[in-house]
Length: 231
Length: 92
Image: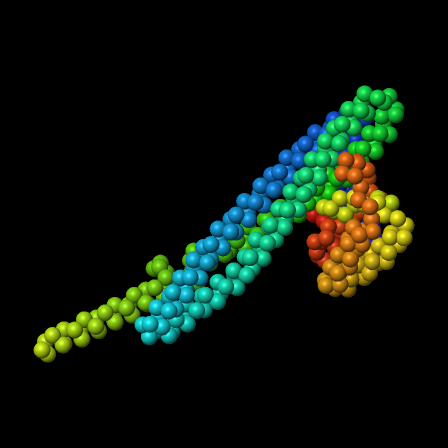
């Protein structure tokens, strides 16, 4: 059995869940229409969720950039103070952050694609729901119960397939945003704690640099005093 | 024959195109069982673009069911394996 046939089976299973069973075909029409409106709301929520997740990642990217700039500045400061060991530490941090940046860019692009997909799904579904609504009224008005049965089955099956399609797109988008949330939380932690931070809080490189700078200042002061006394 | 590409709408395809799609579909089955992600992706993209190029898009307002359903273009090999094992794309 090919992938296409398997996929059809998968979707049909979903459709039969959506369709349910009703005795009166007219009831089926209204029930299906209700479900369509629900799904449309669901897609809208999906779009909003993806948009929020994307914004969150963009904020994170800004924070990451700030951390990168800081590591850069620290490395320069360390070199100035003659502390190559600290410069190396800061550069290691910088490189670590850079690799995070690439994966973050990829995630933002993925969510952007997901957002576009869901928005397209939303507009397609909205068109179909409108078409269904018109058709539903025609069927109710023009056909006897027996004739209606055939028409109802036709249009309910058609729209259920659309709903299964859109429903699946929403579920996949949800899965993606969920897995990104976990990764994003891990990156938050990395940015907040800083890999080089010591237990007393604060950035170890900063502290060492402060010490080095203070030592430099003392030396300068001492030299100044010596030259004064010597005069 | 009406074909739905998941996430991209429905198309009408003739028997000749359907034959071509079946050939690609068979190759996809082989890629899934051998676990060749790259070839799997290539053929899935090829399958979908063949439908879009030679198929006739259905009117947006039409409400019809499809005889053939093509998975979404970004389907992963892992997801394809789930479909083959009958688990569906997303577990209920």
